[in-house]
Length: 271
Image (cartoon, rainbow, N blue to C red):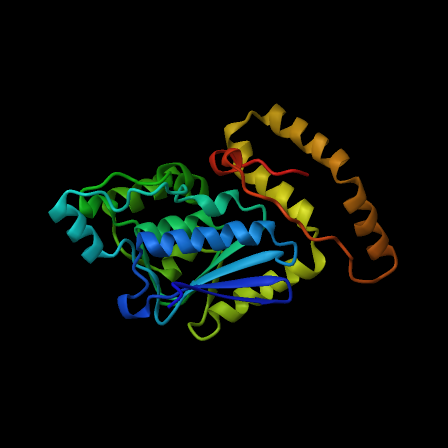
């Protein structure tokens, strides 16, 4: 059984974490399959935007506690195989939208926050959970979360590990759109299809790089990066302007990027 279901339609890749019998609790096997599909999508010019959700009523409640208990009992690591960073979705040069259909905690929260946008079902529960398991803020969440919601709110969510509902998450700025449980995936896919139809994949890849990586650069470096990208995207600008003047949908080419080791450790996209 595939642990990550996939479907491509209209330039949008819909990924579904598929362990409903365990509420999509995270395992190394699921992790490897999910990240491999993301890498394949990065290199697939047909894919222009990605939506990730969970099968059943949960998104991902974190690491499977049975797996953690077994590892703790034996003293063995979860795997002896190389692992990609848990923030791997950040390195994909295409928009990644999390459609949070239910419980989202721990590693599930890391995956949601590593996405570029979050659509959430009303009533869905979210939590960082780490402090309540005796853990630090894992997988760069201490870096990402303050940039999404501000330092004080991030401190609250990380220190308390408390559970919040999607409505509060939206009020805090953690979730960009609230949806009904029945439509959350469809609304995320519709949004992604709009991006796939009208937005340049190369421009979106460049913008994603700017937003994520410019946090680590100075304002002047950010300005210089933008100037260089304008020059690199001349052909995209030409088509974008022509389609507007001619009142037609743009015909932007797809984007294919092989995620090298450099691009999994630093968010670097070719223009």
